[in-house]
Amino acid sequence: MILESAEFVFKPPPVIARARRILIKPSAGYPAPYPVTTSREILATIIRGIRQVSDADILLLEGTLGGGSIYPIYQTLGYDFPRVLLLDVKDCIWVEVDNPLPKPLVMPTFWVPNVILSSDYLISVTPLKIANGRGSLSIMNMLSLLPYAKYSAEAPGGWEALYSLGIEKLITDLYFTLPFDMGIIEARQKFTVRDNQLKGEIEECGKVFVGEPYEVDSEASALLGLKTDYLPLIKEARANLESS
Image 1 (spheres, rainbow, N blue to C red):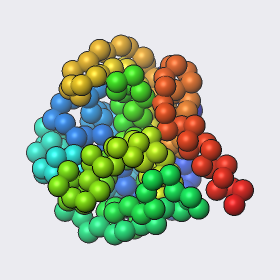
Image 2 (image 1 turned 90 degrees about the horizontal axis):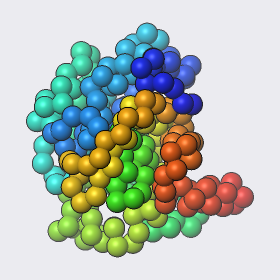
Image 3 (image 1 turned 45 degrees about the vertical axis):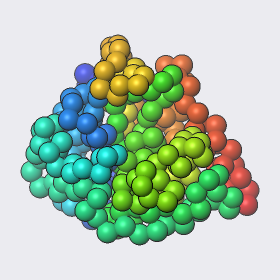
Image 4 (image 1 turned 180 degrees about the horizontal axis):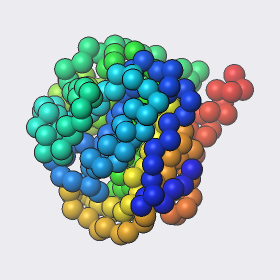
């Protein structure tokens, strides 16, 4: 679903009314405002929409790629919503989860925060970002849910090892392992970066994309002509999973 950002109102699907715990994953790895990170405004809109139909626990979960605390970043970004619990990936209990694909592309298992598995509805909310010529959208946003202590450069199979396996393959495996229900791409602006994740070109776009993460990333990529390498891999893996 493609919406005009100026008119965006979050209309939760019926399943949210029955949920007891809803987890929102923003893109908040840097102490810099939108479009570097998910804006406070869109999170407030989503939370307000949820509260109109549900009294469920609402959690915000994010981690830093460097292993530092996420809480100072939450504070800088103004993430101070009433009755919303802010969590740091590094403080969670981690569990090893099997990749459900019969033939994983690179990762047969992932260590993930257990709160993901105990939540009834999962939402990924990310800015519209193009990094080094590639789309970095709602599925890519899931990457910072992997705990730094398990995947740091010092750990066996750490970040460098993971990237060397092919980030698009890694993201494909992660998509099938983490059961996210919804992706929201905050595309009021398009943010294009290269080596510096904090600086880049900003173009007005005026859209918000809402739907299942693969469908949302595909729709945004098609409309804006983005090269998003993990999408064809997900399509192929999904076909293989359905036929197995």
